Image (tube, rainbow, N blue to C red; front, side, top):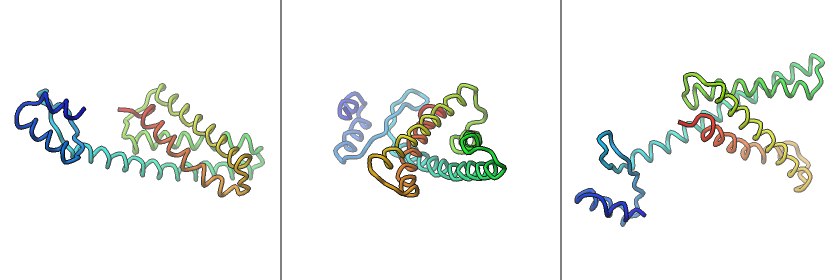
Length: 173
């Protein structure tokens, strides 16, 4: 595929393109503002770096969300609220916190739409469902009797699903 793209390029650009392919280099091709084909590995590296920065920010927000969820849950159950209702309220507060910080800081959005928030809530509900399913697998199929170990297995998987769901479906460019 890369050689076919190189074949249609003019002179010097074609030679550079073929040289890069022979060297095993990945070539990022795009069009500049004048419609001229350009090749740049720096763009590819910048996109990778930006993605890693987003993932780190997403995890920082996730830690804050977990604290919000935990503290509100503890407060509500301390005040006598039933655990299921307290969990729904505290998880909802964590989702609102997550949307606010991820939309503005992680994915750099000025303001969100109602549709964006609905997609965000849907991604989080899918993630919550996946976490319950994976915990069930840990307990019932794998016979892991430790809440801590089960949660440690499930959390990174669900976090990645949630991150990519947010990036690809909610905060896409």
